[in-house]
Amino acid sequence: MRIAVLDETKNGEPRVAATPETILKLKPLGAVFVIEKGAGTASSISDAAFEAAGATIAKNAADALKDADVVLAVRRPKGELAAKMKKGAIVLAIMDPYGNAEALQPFADKGVATFAMELMPRITRAQVMDVLSSQANLAGYRAVIDAAEVYGRAFPMMMTAAGTVPAARVFVMGAGVAGLQAIATARRLGAIVTATDVRPAAKEQVASLGAKFVAIEDEEFKQAETATGYAKPMSAEYQAKQAALVAEHIAKQDIVITTALIPGRPAPKLVSKAMVESMRMGSIVVDLAVERGGNCELSVADVITDHKGVKLIAWSNTPGRLAPTASALYAKNLYAFLETMIDKKAGTLAVNWDDELVKATCLTKDGALVHPIFAPKA
Image (cartoon, rainbow, N blue to C red; front, side, top):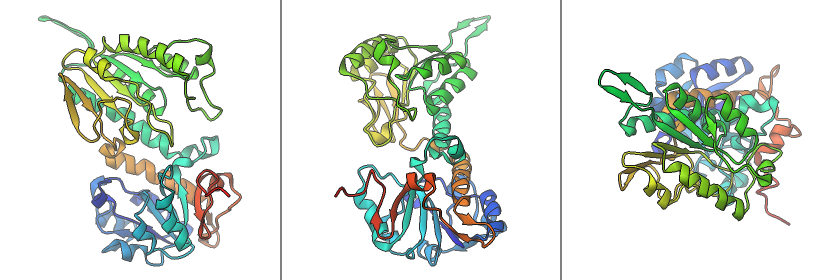
């Protein structure tokens, strides 16, 4: 069972889809790894470290992909690489299928089975495979670190002989995995933290981390969560009331961190130009949803924008700013899923196509786009 891992740094992605640790775990199951040269460099993993774990280093992507049964990647490989894969191979990656059916077609045409890791069901069995959670957790942490670096003032309250330094006020918008980690990190740094979310269950989670919850808690709010734990789109009336409350609150904050992102949809606009302009000079906005258009209307991807003294931080790949840690967690997510597809005795691939995890994540198979959400309608 030959497993290929590609170098994604040339496309601006610093993470890598395998580590020496996951290679050593898969070798006893019959895996032979071929790593493209330099694949782990940005994640502080040298080619020598991969070789020490038993992998072979290929000089380019074509050599790595030759005869590979499995391709592990962070981002969806480019279409031209699909042509270099063998028929029947499987690809595990963050495939970004929403609105990108055309980009999936080369894999279907080649007879490659692709699996979108971001579609993994959020059930107990699949927690160890949940790439959205593992990466969002790091994004929430990094958002606070980035804010602290640019803010230029102390986070905790300090009482000194020269006077008292007030604690920074941090407002986190969205209390999912990223938001909760941002709350916890800001609290550890000594900030006064508040947070908001449209899901009722978030109130207790926010309070458990020592932050104050801010929201319009009417009847619509009480019904604002789907069965899968995601936020429902809210009515225009509720959005107006919530926006008024948030606008008043933001004007008093030093740092605002936005994390609201629903898979497959444009990021909701939560912070307007007027809200940014209401903040005092030196304040910070960190937008973690810029990859889907951003929660702040002034966000510009991959730059720090200065708008009338307020700095807006909007990195499109925040987990990648912690590439070694992000790669380690992501590789474990991939290992946990791939391990379920292997016949342990024979050391070969044995995908159970009736497995609920396979059904939920499989995009292409047997020459067609098969996922019910993305497949062409009859």
